[in-house]
Figure 1 (cartoon, rainbow, N blue to C red):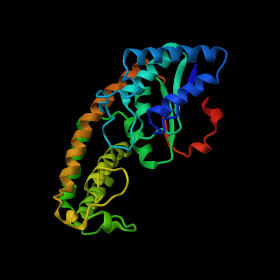
Figure 2 (cartoon, rainbow, N blue to C red):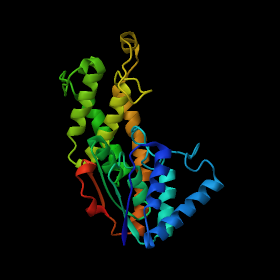
Figure 3 (cartoon, rainbow, N blue to C red):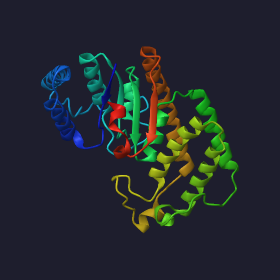
Length: 285
């Protein structure tokens, strides 16, 4: 049994190909035979489809991959194809280690193919997303929780803003901050940690959309004061819309995870907050 280590930091497709090429150039023996076979399969894919590395027009985000618009997300279908090629040339590969796992694209594609996954990321939000993607949820339960959250928000008469940080009022209108606070309090009441985590993701996506930061760029770039005042924002409705869509995504995700555990009942998943520089390489090779 062997482990595949990947570096999925968002460096663009050119860098991804360069990294693979570098790996092939510095191997010898049985590993060289495996990487040569993998290189051959990838070249054939590229010859048959010039758009293979870009997956232009085929990069759907479904089955759990679309629960949050994380910056520079990898193309799920491309990662899936690469993993299948790795499994084809080396059936002994049983697990994947990703030190820059981001939102968990490689994780979900690995597990759905029966591969154990162990990933780290320095960003707690990324680890939250990957953790939610690694869990199987019952849609009916999430629907009931969503209704409970709605009722709590409607009954919440507190005018207290739940969080305080520098320049909060620059990035959030007062009415938006209050509604987000009510949602935070409503979610916090749920007892089951994994369920809270699922709705934290929905809240995080809501925050991204209702803040004063333009969504057209990953950098913080605020709307003008005039635009901020004129924006029509219904924070709670945005959360409800996002969470409803999320529940549908998580339903498909459960099916993908189930397929993986059927292929390998012993597979394990771990997603932890860590700096890749502090993770001993020897543990993951």
